[in-house]
Image 1 (tube, each protein chain N blue to C red):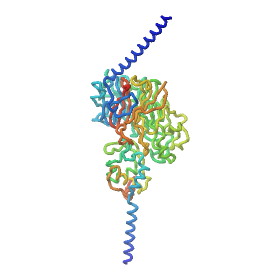
Image 2 (image 1 turned 45 degrees about the vertical axis):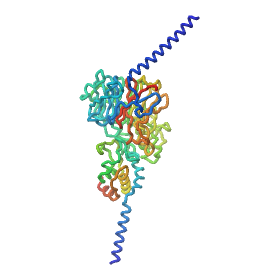
Image 3 (image 1 turned 90 degrees about the vertical axis):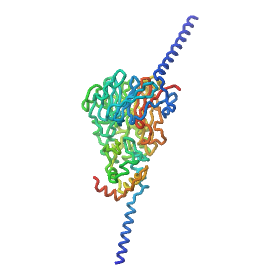
Image 4 (image 1 turned 180 degrees about the vertical axis):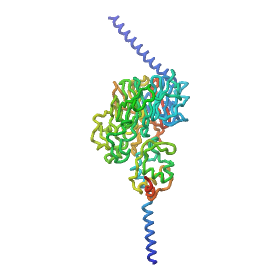
Length: 432
Length: 134
């Protein structure tokens, strides 16, 4: 009996030691990976949950849209305005302090999308998608001679950005935004009726799927993967569910079509929605919008709606509904090990911030978080990183910083790009 | 004869007076109309939305040629026409349903607000520009 007791006791002691050493080595790994990366004294001006810190990796990049981080921790940034004649910047941190000392520019096409997959860097203009071969260190080998993967996509200057993401089966997904607010006969004109069927949907207003390794594809070589999406800027492939998630920019100006909606109501409608897409999905634009207050798909007034009539019986319901007009521009499912367990596999969403809530106060200009479990949201969304705008009574024209793109570093750091001030932020968990 | 001259003088004066009254743009009314028709996109302080809706602060379009500005309001815009080197993606609906006086009031308000110091635009000017605008 005594022997048995000793065995059991020693087993538990051993277990405890093993656990502790695991935990310690886990922490050690984290510390080693972040090197001497420390948050800025003011956390780069951001408000973060306890235990998190932030630093400015670099600034002055101008319109920094989406970003991708290599396995070595270097950063590629896609710009929507040329900086010194270049549209992609490679940022390298030589001394491991988290601040990048060197910026190398290449490419001369403005745009939003950038992603790394299987040894290639993919980047988009507003009409095309290119790719560059990466070497073992994640550096582009052919900066002046990329391969053209997709060409000839519609750019009618409204919702023109072509965001991209890739799955694990050799496909690339490209957003082609609708060049319209709500597919009226005359865009944004009061009392101009909605067109049904909406002719825009044949070549825009959805997500298109192309092969990641085939050259010069265009409409015809494509698959329209999902439709009824007004404009998507933030999108990510979720490796837990093995499916595509997107954030839609909901319609503007509900108050402008009829007098059915007061300004106050229009400010709070419709919800900015996260959708999980499978091939053939239809999210209902332009016929319906999602009302996050009634939790219903409501017929748009341009199509006979009155604010109560429901519609879109075959249209998808959103996975998450956020407040109206706050402009989701980045989506990232977090798979890193640096952040506490609650964040694992959850979604970070970068909200660029509203303009269509005027004359009411603007909203957004933050990075939100949605916890996920088994591929579904497991709790309410919350503001994760706030105060990018750096001003009270924030205005889109004067906000100092606007979150746009998101990326995860090899150590689990979260990177956020800002297309107003050209800052790249790095958010780390220190536990302090 | 004298009587007729006096009457004519009086009538002429009255006409000029009334004309001046009706064509004098009202900044106060312009502000009210701006809030109703323009503020959603161009914002309360005229700062606009980067890349989407142009600002109305000290731009060459707002403070420059009256005809170009009035025509922009009447026609709207569905193209990415650069404004001081920057382009904006949202379409602007034509505002040709507004009366000459309303456009005059709005533009006079805009041209004298948000740090702008450009001259007033009268309803008569809007009327004559509208007449040559397709």
